[in-house]
Length: 599
Ligand code: FHN
Image (cartoon, rainbow, N blue to C red; front, top):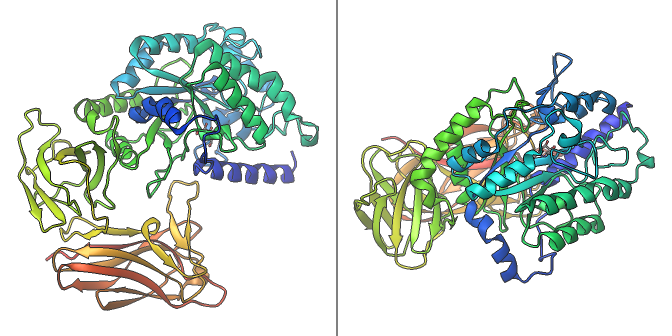
């Protein structure tokens, strides 16, 4: 495979992944001709569910991201185990024999469903066919499947469906409808080591002979609640339409993700990151429990249960779902660490589930101590950073609070609630949190929450008042809000700030006098070193100099100085360039943080 092919592949991948992983293909109008009411009814269970299990399982679990003894250095970060065929450019003739070794005798569908249910998950999505082309179900369309090509000979999708129905769990299938490294005519990020001549490839042939027939089989044999397609590049609108028409004909209520392509899905799928702001359409964040989708025998970077709970709360507080992934082993079991962590998450969900299921995004802008989810007449305050002084300020809540209690307290012993001025409420909390990961305070309120969304400056030293790029008002011709990149360190930012007249601003409200250290989080390359900017608030001005922050995507924090807010009131925080060296942009600014100075 020539260097040129490699380069094309790599940028194709980056582009395709960037688009889908940003959840870019958001549906404008309902592509299935449904009325908004019909669509809402069809998606109601999915919006209520909020938390699901993703499983990447296939014959790639056998090499477990090692090939010929070499741990395969992953091409794109985190895309390893299920990508071993692509990353190691394994010929079909060498990869297919893995099927003859695949015999997951320890597979127990009831157990898998029980682990998910016990973790508080309401639906499961499993890889029926990943990009390696191997079907994990009884497919007549291709003999390259688990029933016909393995010693196992059983159909795990049939068994999972039965177990899900028994335990009231919804089952969905991941299906790679565009990419297939086993097939000579598949496109997308294709197999160029067995089938180098791209010009000869006819995607319609692959779709008609394998992809569409297998999706039809999945719909007919297992009646899935969800079809979770993956990177749709090279699929034209008429292709996505073919899949959608098939689904609407055979499983009208099936929920479909945006990666069906061409704006024909029901929801966006940000991958491995949580949107900073609140997307204005349905979304589901998919994320690995360690660093890999498929089983990787060397990956022990497990997210602790507390991190999983906080991710879930962060996502649900923005109106999203969380699809958390596990890669089962070739024997057919979940890694023990995954089972342990999911059980711990389940403990929290057993106490706090009502603050997740069927909730909507909370009404508040920024809450330095945590997040908020809502139901009619109730606000669930998720306290992730317990106030050392026991005073939980609920900023901008104008609505009358009827009662407050800890969700974990079965007696619902009332907590003392005081109104701090017309706009704010304070709840007196006990000394210690019930759960350090997240302790939920329930506020029962009169009617719909009415909230002043102007961020409030918290004076309690433990809280940081973060004014993020996604919330800034941008002024000028060149200044832009920038997305994210696929990497572990993910930062959104204000960038391409070339015009010294351009500036960024945030409104805020102080409820008491106080001093704050001003810290900016930014990234800059060597050329930007020396650019200068001014931070203004409350008639005070600080001048800062831009420092280079190292290689490509390193964001760093810099203290610019200290400001003093003399008293309650509304203020505007601004960042304006002072000098921008010719041919450069000021910097990439992720956030300005006002940190209360400890007295
Ligand atoms: O390449 C795949 C990857 O293997 C995995 O399936 C993820 C899950 O969302 N999707 C693609 C990368 O975006």
